[in-house]
Length: 245
Image (cartoon, rainbow, N blue to C red; front, side, top):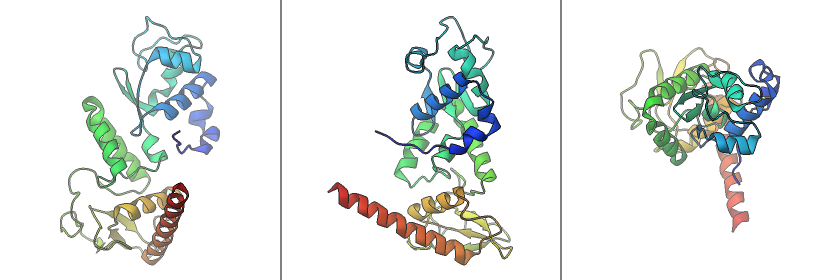
């Protein structure tokens, strides 16, 4: 049985609070049934059977230009248009990757490789999706560009004027990769830090949980928090493996 993160605060936020009961239920169905990249193939028969909403066989354009019908899947989908991208019968949930703590995407991460492969397979949505990911990363202070520039951390490519470089990972010094994250530190300096895949995941979780704040944390504090969280994560993973033996 798979498990997923969920944003518990959504119930008090207007974008979710103002949805109808049917739209809330349909959003939860999409969130729980989309794949690891946030994609869901819209199957009216399955949705109707599982969620309990009737489907109109003659309707077209589930998210655009649909004529609302009381308690129908079409009517429940329409208010969700701003939360999704769609082409044909494929729908992509915009905030899913961030909510599952999968941003920024790391090409060296095995799970992220699967996500990137799924995004790249949807040609008509690919550009929209990567633009949306970049937008979310900027809003959340996650600077980790996809595609161009990802490579060996010792490369001089990607160096920005006025930004200091810390070229080694805090823990796995020889495994740092990519163009890294530009962090605005408490001292007012912008420093680009490079992290190994595991530390990168930990760093993103700390940013997501607001334990590392832009302009309010020193480089030493960031290093200390990443090291502590990484060691705790390694310890927990080790305990889980022991119990599974």
